Length: 88
Image (cartoon, rainbow, N blue to C red; front, side, top):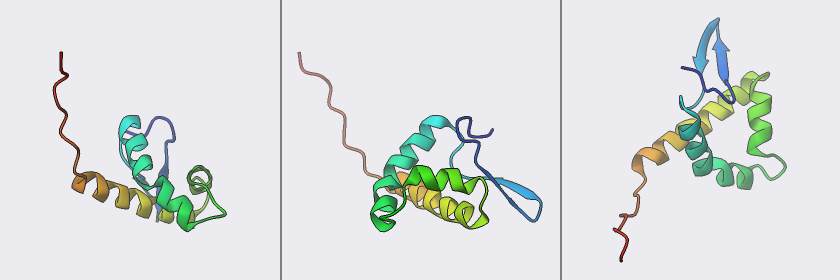
């Protein structure tokens, strides 16, 4: 399945590879995990601009793929707080 909203795919030697998670919900979560760090490290750039450029630039496709890999790692190792039952 392709990412419905962005449809970000990269071609390497004629082989098309999907960049990032498969669902819109997972993509949004992954973006939240890396967007601030990307924009902090690239002061004159935004994550949205990177996504747009990745459609046309192999370098930006690779950069986006790397950031999505970081997000995937963070999502796997994230410690989520326990959700307590609501008090009445």
